[in-house]
Image (cartoon, rainbow, N blue to C red):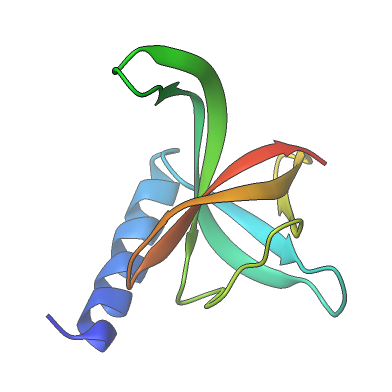
Length: 106
């Protein structure tokens, strides 16, 4: 699978998920510079596990499409269309299509 195929597939899937309320549109706001419109998936109450598999605490994560924001940075802000603002705190995972961040209230 090529990067261009994955990017096109992710964009198509995101558009369909957004139509059904499963994805969000947002604006990525770096520490400096203009905001960048982007597609995101917000997961609330995502359990984080400890060393032996126990749930340590619940977090909120945001998955950002790399086609929109290739290299999100820690402490940048995500402004959701709903008006809620979230701050990128910890990179949880990444692949060719997206990055997943633990977020807090901005």
